[in-house]
Length: 234
Image 1 (cartoon, rainbow, N blue to C red):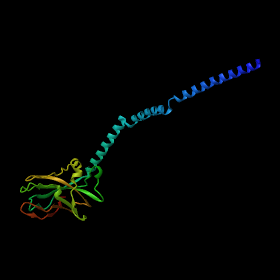
Image 2 (image 1 turned 90 degrees about the vertical axis):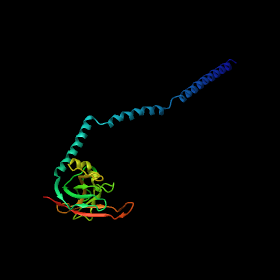
Image 3 (image 1 turned 135 degrees about the vertical axis):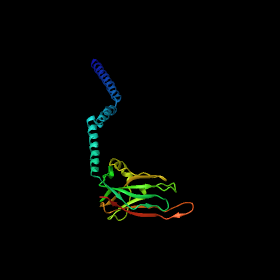
Image 4 (image 1 turned 90 degrees about the horizontal axis):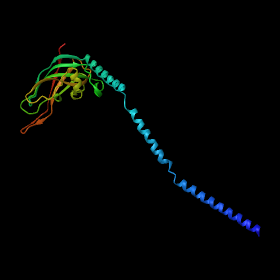
């Protein structure tokens, strides 16, 4: 009888121990489920890497000064190129538009001009040539005139080339060639227009005055074109 009681007591003690162990295990699992996810902290730790990289993009004062010096040297080189510019006095027959009254005559030619920027050199095998004109705009109509009424050809040109003054105005001014702007009704001026033609020389250039067909309230007028053979004074 005593032995039975002892065994029962032992079983009861063992069961109590197992129950306590079970409670302890369930508490550990609950603690694990409330632990923060590591992906949140990894996201915040990466952000300083992005901001730290930004200072490397700014250039130092030394680099800025170096770039400025390089640009200045390139500008000086372009100016030096136009030190080879050859400017000649020239003449041509004078021509007056029979309708508009615009009068054109060549007074100068400049060879070996160098431009600036993307079009520093003339396209293909062509070469820039500047031509100076003495111009008087007609006073009959409000329409003025400009370089767009002129063209230039060399003996190797398949056709007269239109002016390219607008793309090199600043370079022309730096070289001492004042571009001709719009000459308004009744006004007179003397200025330069720029072209590019193949193999230009002092002996093979012909300017051209041209105007498209036009009409007023009474009449339609045909287009007008006149070649002006250039003679360079040597």
